[in-house]
Image 1 (cartoon, helix red, strand yellow):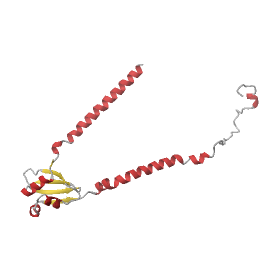
Image 2: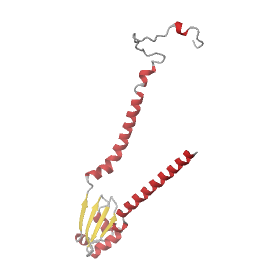
Image 3: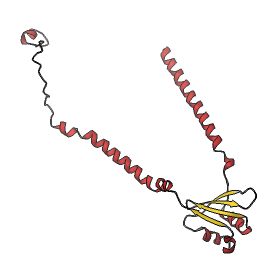
Image 4: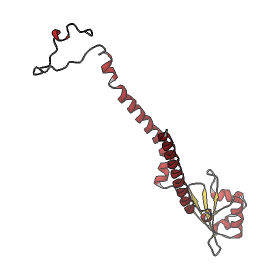
Length: 181
């Protein structure tokens, strides 16, 4: 019984150790991901109001829908917003009452997806499942490959090499009279 008690103490000690490491790791990661560094999220109507007042210095459209807005203030405040992917930014802002002359005062740039992001977002979801299916079929076929060769050999024995130099030969005289024989 002392062995079982020692095992439960080891399990408890290991669990508490892993829990401590997990909490330590989570606290370190939370230091690097503080919400104070995140730009403020605003809506499109608020962005249109800022543009009409002439407070916007630059708008950058990233990944088709994300907007990064830099204001004209002394601190260079950075704001974020989202737009629909199907509609262009000038058309969307015109719907909110921003005139083309007000929009010309703002620098607008569009950044496309980089090669790796395009690959990860569009191609990887197709290739990864196909790769798993091919790997699964390959493993299954490897396991079945030798089965057909051995299926019709039921009842056949494998030949064994006889060593003539072997002196320990069993004869009938050795087993005569034995009950097992």
